[in-house]
Length: 328
Ligand code: UFG
Image (cartoon, rainbow, N blue to C red; front, side, top):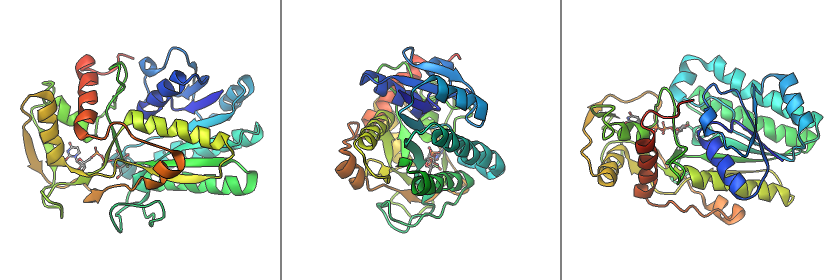
């Protein structure tokens, strides 16, 4: 049995769909604070509750024979983490502490962890390697780095093996169009851009056009959510094969500016998308592009959605199917 903490969230739900497709048995824990009931796969066993609740988590581990944990349960909005960092320490860091204590108690020795490019902060070079310096510029990234460090020492002391996956900009949706990205409030570029052709927003704000990039807008490395989900499955397999703990970047290795994303979205939708240049958003690095060579070599990861159009097209399919997102 694979326990997916946060399996009703955006990346968690897509990972559950891929795991079940591959014949795995899945149990989900989610407090539904940011996750959605409608995103839960019908074949997964579901426990509604919070990983910070020791008794609840203990019950889940007692009632199920858990072999591996895949851990997504966390808050992930950079801006919110700067307004309310304690919320992030509580849910992300303390939640992971209770999870690790429970894993230790029940002798579960494998965990795949949802980490982020935000652990790096302002990069010292592009593309970013896993060995580059980690100096987060926001509280969200700081808590994810703290969680990674907790795994490192839990491995040292209790031999709990972890694989941490540092995602860059995850986008797109499941090929069925049945599940996709649905945050409230939405802060991510691609879903916000697509709200314009959906008629839900008049224009997209471009946060700064005076960065040191080829068109002045920020460069990001966009990666499809199903490719990210696949990396988790490869990580589970690697841990099953007795692998040591490790950290991997997940990105396409190619950067796109905000303006290029808007142009690509116009092409995909065939509709006009108005934009307005606004001032910079606090804490945005100019460029974030991953080297995912290590994941490709060691995990055998091979992302399939390598064009930005294919990523945006799958997001478009989802948003057209559910313009108001999930009902529950
Ligand atoms: N942007 C706009 N207008 C918008 C929204 C975003 O111009 O309305 C810009 C941002 O300024 C940024 C780019 O689009 O330059 C991408 O922004 P997102 O909010 O979509 O993504 P981020 O790069 O800020 O965030 C991602 C992940 C975070 C992670 C972070 C690491 O979503 O979880 O990378 O820096 F922490």
